[in-house]
Length: 482
Image 1 (spheres, rainbow, N blue to C red):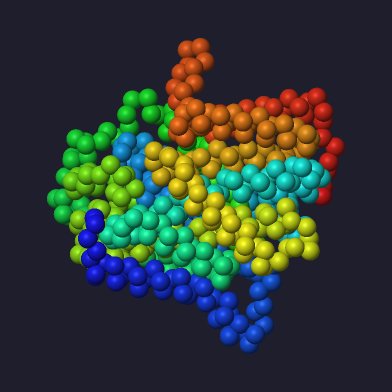
Image 2: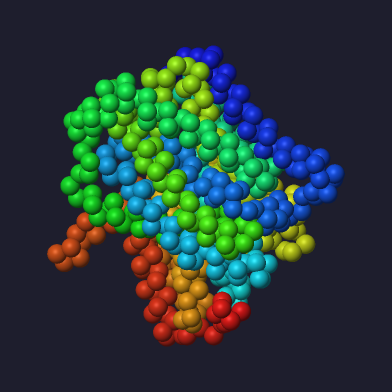
């Protein structure tokens, strides 16, 4: 792993650098073809002018959703603990009906009110500046470990190419910073198709060629039975609760909501909800790479290196370089949307109106990436996927204000604030006690087992909201009346 292969490195540089250059040049290209009319205003940089149709939205939302989490973290978890890592599949299946039913309504509310962020929508519902600030800050904090996961993905493949020390992390940070600064949301939106094509090629070749090297899928599964169990005893409950909590959290993040609000219409969102399950098929194939690595004899204590090591062991250098570039681009594109979505929260909900400029959005996005860099350096999570799950625990605390606020029930702003405070304290306290693990042991009478920490904290949050609302009913207008 310490020797640099010039063929692998050369192919990687060509594809990775080309994506950065294309994304960074998007605004210049748009100005060229529109004869200077494509000025980059605040909404253009942050939401692409709300003009993305079904095709671009499909790639953008899919690009938000399928990241280094998918290509690095999920196979790494499968490699380490077996079928438990497949919880990501039911999670994506659960979330698509949620998108179809809920997100078009949020889009209409945002379009009617000119809202750019979740905090904007919550402010319109509850008429509460403190609640708006809390939702904005929560989104900022939650997205940092998620961006950290993308930086880990880029760093991992550069490490696999043989570059030493901190050079991979420096390259990962600088490439993401340049790509986001210059391109805005148009960069990931219009290069997401490059990312998806590259990942599809890498994955389809991998799940075809690698099993052939092992004597076919029958031999692969036979070998898997002797390496990792499908699902260890006692893992059914954490498997199910992690899937549910991840599904509920998925479209609360600023980056996934940014992809939704950038759509041209509510029907565009519904169309995407119908076709997004195609990505789930690819996710299942990617997760199987963790099993393949065992059978192929990959042996490492750094589970994040499982997929890069597998590709390098099986493929010729030039194609392994292409596959590693696909993983890096697969982290770069969504990380940019994450930083932009978080920057929207700062410029629209925390700064005065006169300071809502593109330059401040860029500076904020850069500061958020620095925060993600610090997460990589100082948070000692056992698995890379724990960064995403930690972000889920945090962002789930906005679920009552954003999603339950759609109901006709008159929840109060005070109740939402109280629920957020208690839920956040419980969630973060349990995570800290458990060493950043995403599940917590629960024992209630005859019932005992490990349950998703995010789900526990959300239940506590909702219980507090219901209790406080019963004592002090809300008086603000519901969304459908706004």
